[in-house]
Amino acid sequence: MFLITFITSIPAQLVLYVPVLHNPGYILGGGADNGVLLGAFLELILIIANIGTAVVVFPILRRQNEILALGYVTARIVESAFIAVGLLSVLTILTLRQEAAGADAASLVTAGKSLVALHDWTFLLGPGFVVGVGNGLILGYLMYRSGLVPRGMAVLGLIGGPLVCASGIAVMFGVFEAGSAPQFIATIPEIAWELSLCIWPIVKGFNPAALAALASEPDKTDMNERDGEKEISLAKA
Image (cartoon, rainbow, N blue to C red; front, top):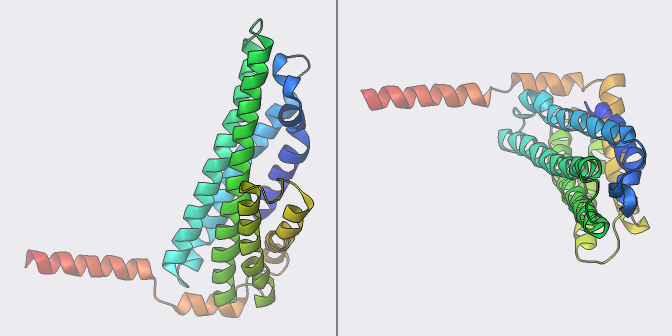
């Protein structure tokens, strides 16, 4: 799932969306839209894979800390919601480009710039901030404590998460620009952390001893259900 997020996110943002995001005149028409549509399709797959990275490991991670495991799922959903809003802004530009022929050019360009600005903010707040909380801090902590992956690898997430959040806040307050060298440098540990999560589970798998230790932990959900049933029985009595 993490590998799919890399495969789908990089081409969309760095290649396929370039015309619509960096050319204000794109909305006025001319040329094919297939590249942008492919980028939108890839981002749909990205949203599914994003949520999948959390849902698939939730049954394991909840045995380490159920609240944080649920927090990780929530963070991935929030990030995916931001991505979806950005995706809709791009598709709206395509609709205006295709169906607003004859409209005032200046008005169309202004509308296009507004939608691009919306996309940029969603990218900053989602992949540029929430990722630091979810993938970095929460998942890094859960992996570090559980020992499912080497702890030195999990430290990358614990370092990268705060750096991603800090760089996103810095861009928000105008300390430096989005996509600038300082922001890229700040995201390197997080990129390394997520890239390692693409490779390590495929090549090595989770630590068997850590898996066995987590498997020996009682299922907190089943315990909560049993406690709830006991409370209902007592209430009836």
